[in-house]
Image (cartoon, rainbow, N blue to C red; front, side, top):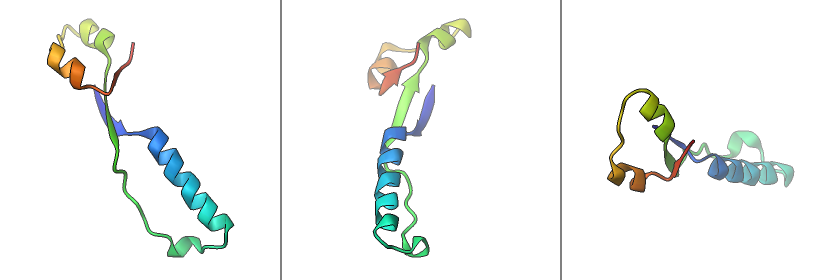
Length: 67
């Protein structure tokens, strides 16, 4: 299982910062942002290999599964 930052959202926000810098904004004056969107991913095959069972309710709540 992994609870991590949504990489797509991070890349989109980085593009906004690049655009501001290219339009003349000073990097030192740009605000620092923290991630606001996270993903919950489950790897059922790894869990099975470790002898763990993942409840169906948890699989439904996950944003995605990794095979």
